[in-house]
Image 1 (tube, helix red, strand yellow):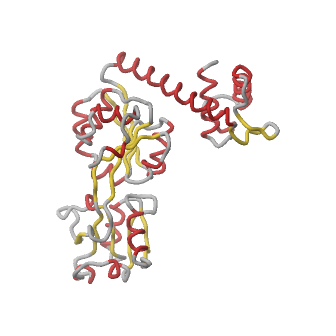
Image 2 (tube, rainbow, N blue to C red):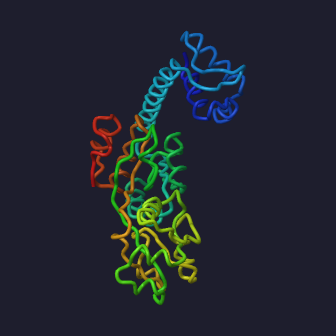
Image 3 (cartoon, rainbow, N blue to C red):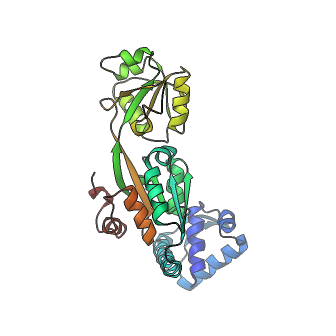
Length: 315
């Protein structure tokens, strides 16, 4: 049995039983992958995949048990490699942090600056994407840490820890009638064209749920992936914006007025995700602590080892 054979079966499942895609990702040939999987099945004496002709169409019951153990073995092998590299390289290396635009633009800068000062030999890469992309990148090992407000706590293979709660606010030009609404209500917002986040982003589900509970249909005329774009179009007078409260700065965002919406929409939670079973390097623990001081090494390891559920760490 070879580690590479285990990588093949895991990647085939990740690629939806597409052997050609798995081979491409693994920089090998489709016949080579198929041959090694067949040799592994013969050695173990079990059929891992269900077949239709030469095509894989599913995973057998025995195959599921094999895959679970294969994933554990590969994670432990990766931990050993990471450990060796850490001791060999000391405090050098690279750290890939995947985050949404809102987190990268407004929540991460102070932690990034402190980390770069403390670890000048570590190459820090910030990769922006949707919450779903971030979950995929962390799950596949393409990112070390994921930071977002949606999806991360729903993906198998990840542990996600709560970082902080945040709320939405409503933004408009100072002369807009909505700024004079007292109190501000969902029915008032429903009267106006609205500009807010894409459905996969930054607490958007909280916005949709709030209107739905009151049987209101918001007139969302434009959606965007980040708050800066939303603010641009609100300033142009194209609608009323709903953004994360942390994305508004009265000194910087001249020409806009922000209204509290904490009574309209439930709070959201920024979450930090790691791949289950893969333990961070020393400088990764440091980045996590700089971004979320309550997530010390003991808390992170307890969650990774399954000693406590991630939801036990309430804010």
